[in-house]
Length: 151
Image (cartoon, rainbow, N blue to C red; front, side, top):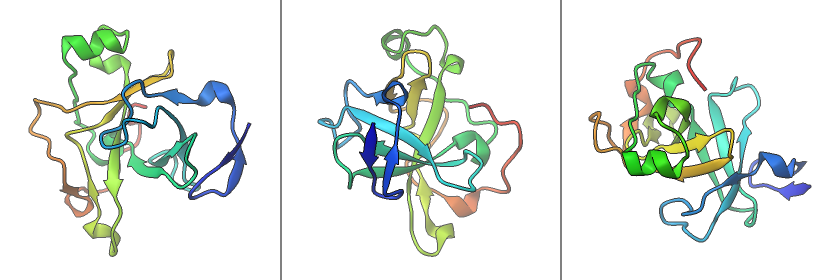
């Protein structure tokens, strides 16, 4: 299928790669389907959640493990059941970013990651109650990325 995007122009996407957000993203509950697209040259650490329905709606996201290798999000039992897994480690996680200039002033939201079940393509944005994570971590807080980060 052809997809018009905010950052990549018109591209070809496979329908089976679509992520399904039954509850949408916070503030965008009506948007249920997204594609997760990597930015060229980012080695999978910088990505974009592109709406399948609204070309101008896209969210910059990062692999949180590339920033904080000890990141350990834990979902509630209810959230795990909804995601059809038994443990949080069975999911992939991405954090949404607010990009600013200079880039060091950009922030990532480690408290409200997007969790994805790669097998079912189901995704949900959650609020972590544990771990001491915040909604506005400055990128400048983090050192160099680590190799071998999960997902």
